[in-house]
Length: 123
Image 1 (cartoon, rainbow, N blue to C red):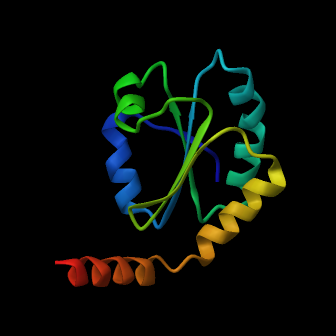
Image 2 (tube, rainbow, N blue to C red; image 1 turned 120 degrees about the vertical axis):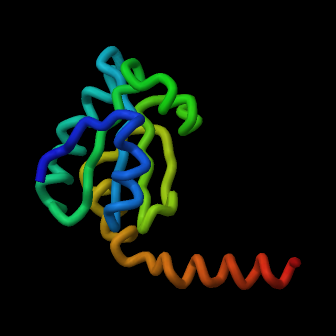
């Protein structure tokens, strides 16, 4: 699978309709973003079961603001619609691969249940 460029109109549907989504917030003028692009594309090829989306922060300024992007590149990861990773900076290939594996292994249902139990206890 290849990376796909997404817009604000596509963002929420993409996150909610796919099990795991990685989102690379980038800009064409950003040298670290351009350097990270081949690593992100290689990850998309290696992990076809994970959606690899790219958001051009220049073209999608409102989405970047809504996502509170303060530095680029910023990588966000969502699992079953929940944000599970959010960090600025380009990752080397091995670190990105390790992140994808950890997200695949992460039991989001257990984390949600634990959070709900904690919230109920506090109420």
